[in-house]
Length: 218
Image (cartoon, rainbow, N blue to C red):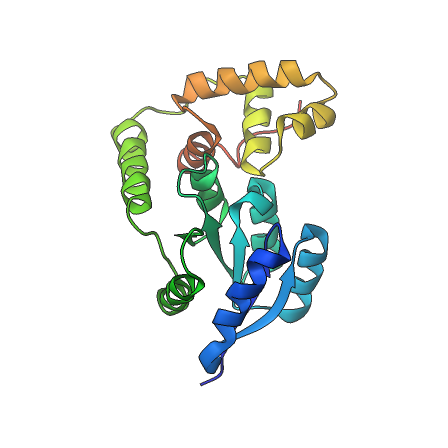
């Protein structure tokens, strides 16, 4: 059986190299790259077609995860980092399929990567509980018995569509030729009308309600 190929992205090589060494021990994994520069990481990812991208959460944002999913659809993303990271759920919604805490021995992370490679998903407690609670919240408030399409204005609908692409407030402001503060107000209005408390909920609801495909430029 051929080894599972793994590509690592993080903030420092000094933290990634011990993990890479642990991964190659026993020849279960083939580390095809270690990178701290995100732009170079994309090039390596495209070239090697790794089975798993092991990514530190502090090295990416939502747009970066979406881009990796787009350019390397066959590469599964497993995050490592702090389970209290406020963007963790957003990164999972954006396309990552697994997470494991970073502050443990490399051997434990290797075992987690093995489990992830076999099952294709890894959401240890309490993260799995958090994700389940989020899904139940969405089902309760926006399921078949929930609200119909909220009355979004054309500009609000466009802002929501751009949120689903992972665009930041600054990127949206530049695209629409408005100020960042204007975009913040429009995003807040979208959240209020959707009943969402953050971007990940707004994006999930946009897809759930079919709003991601219905907007048009104004």
